[in-house]
Image (tube, rainbow, N blue to C red):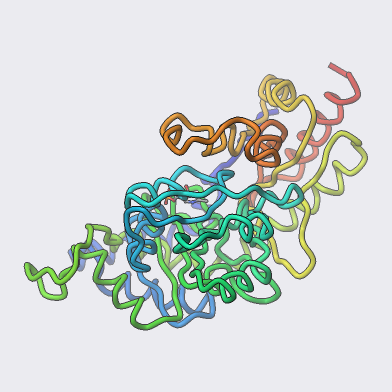
Length: 370
Ligand SMILES: Cc1ncc(COP(=O)(O)O)c(C=O)c1O
């Protein structure tokens, strides 16, 4: 049997007519950048997250960069974040000449550990970027407490977490700014790159909308130093169709995750994902922790099963960040996670027989039946 890590074809089949009609509408209007589909998506994402404002941009990476620019991050500032994440969480900081200060993670959730954040705060700390990794929110109660006490704004990297909830509050609605990615493989994915910022602060929203268009309120009159990071109308048209289905798709992912966790519960070596009380996890990834991870990965690949490591090299150990001076051993939980985690195939339409096969092969591996 072949099991893909992710198969986007069945989802497209479900919504093909709606998507093609929406795309045709964009071609008929011949307005390809920003415009009414983007405004509609901004309203819908804001409503979906229960927050006042949303600003479309070109990618999740740009959303992070714009969020930091909007908060006035400058060269020499420190921004605390996790190194157990996708690259651009930290590169957005260094692109502005600021310094990422890496904090360790909670080994249960793989999200940033609030006590490590607390210890990392200095007079130079100007922001904290939390990442809601794999689709589960970080401990936002504790993080926001630090934010208020130390007067440091929080950026939520919610690129993997659209629809995730922390005690009823949506990812992207709790900090100063939320950042989303519409990369095609995300739970809400476009047909190319796309991103969104969310905020409850009107002035910040206006500033972000300005920064994404070269800082120009009026064309060729530049008030501030911005960038080109606009969302395309085609992306917005596709996403406007998909966002209506998102709650159902997230629910289907949750059900499939629960099925794995039940099926894998009999295998002692496997630690299934932890869901913190009061959280709604949207399972962008279903990630287990196992001994002999690399061997298991190779075995599953030989068995025709797609699986992936997110992330094999933590950011503090990346060559491009060597100038920050981190050493192996500095962030033990992050380094352990990078050696032990493995993402299994999960998406709303994955057939049950395929999940059964994945569970069976993992069982065979640890029981030595191979
Ligand atoms: C946690 C996280 N942050 C940032 C990004 C960057 O998003 P994008 O690929 O849209 O630039 C991603 C997605 O790739 C992500 O998973």
